Amino acid sequence: MSILLVRQSAIKKCANVLCGLEYDLYNDVYQCSCGWLLDIVYKNRPPSSLITRFFERRNHGSNIYNESGVWLFRDLINFVGIDTEDFESCASILVSLDGAEGRLSKPYKMTKAAEYADMNHDSLFLQPEGYNPSGSFKDNGMATALTHAKLLKVKRLVCASTGNTSASAAMYAANEDMECDVYVPKGEIAPGKLGQAFQFGAQVMQVTGTFDDALSISLRKCREDGGYTVNSVNPFRLEGQKTIVYRVMEYLDWNPPDWIVYPGGALGNCSSCGKSLIELYEWGWIKKIPRLLIVNSSGANTLYELANGLFEEIKLSWNGGRPDTELIKRYYSYKDGKGIVPKTTATAIQIGKPANILKALRALDFTRGIVTQVTDKEMSDGMTVVGLNGFDCEMASGSVPAGIRKLRNEETIKKDDVVVGILTGRQKDPTLSVQYHNDASNMYARPPRTE
Ligand SMILES: [Zn+2]
Image 1 (cartoon, rainbow, N blue to C red):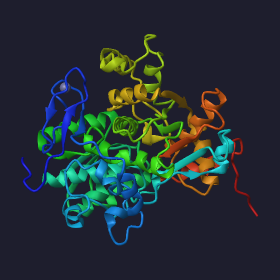
Image 2: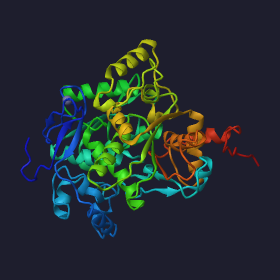
Image 3: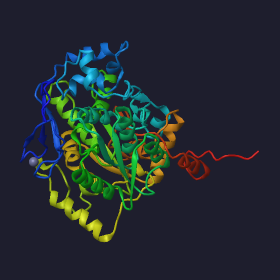
Image 4: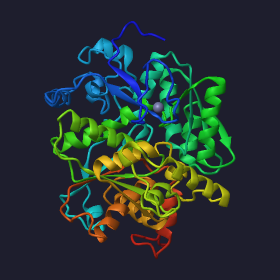
């Protein structure tokens, strides 16, 4: 399909450096014939003089594309090739929840979290992406994915979800008057998130099995019945999520922190972080490369085990663009053969077969990144201490302060390193907090009293 209104300023390109096949932007192909996922590659190098323009847009007036924390940076994700200063062009092409995506997201100092993680008060920042309209970071990527879907005149979105993707997809679908089918693992999704999917008018498809099963079913249904997938296999999702990093950089005057920390689930976020840093570095916008810390749940720790050589004593790495994909296959068949499925109360990251694992390896390689793991109990402490700072996050996001604390104990992170942790989602299962505080043995428990 061709778009006559706009100039093509980007292509889709296979992420496999040994392949590098290119694809037209205006179709829904997300996977190369060689099996790897695709990247969006821009033809032009944006000048760093845009930094001034971004700053000026913070005085947004009535322009929702300046108000949006995603589209504020539209010049850096301008795959459509629109005139970014022309409001009418923005309004006709860019999909936005009235400027609300990413609007409340920026790094915040959280003193009690810093004390918990043994960091200097001025060194630790946490960025609550749960304060997006649907309650998670997914809105960043859904804005760009839906922009692409709208160009293709898509009528029906399809996704698999542990809850946050379905909530976000359904919200955007409702706003754009599209249908939305969401495949969720039955009984493995926070009730508040399931409620959102219903509330925003999605068709919920319950799958008996894991998220990994739900994803493979949803992708097959997409192929067989038509529909546009908005899971993070879709490269346009990752383009929007790059703005999480842009907001970090802007807040720090484009002086990169020492570390950026994410929970590890499907690894789309970690991949988009890597891509944004690679591009900023290649464009000459940053000189220093922050290190990426990915925190797995110990109950869903595929990347942790593989990257640290805990399976077959081989460390999985990017290896100059030649990662050992056979090792990953053997790991999955070993787990399948033993009937081992991911299990954690942090359902948002209860994922055993992360779709973006190869791009995440690229991100780890570029940033000299590290993968660690934390227990459910540690994530609960992390979630709770964020609450004590007056911010709300879900248990999966609690992995971020918990992981920083762990690396501080190991002396890998220094007390005065500048660390920015991304709190990916908001609490949508309040029973977790009630349970936590009813158990007096928990670090921050404040059990209820009876008068
Ligand atoms: Zn390829």
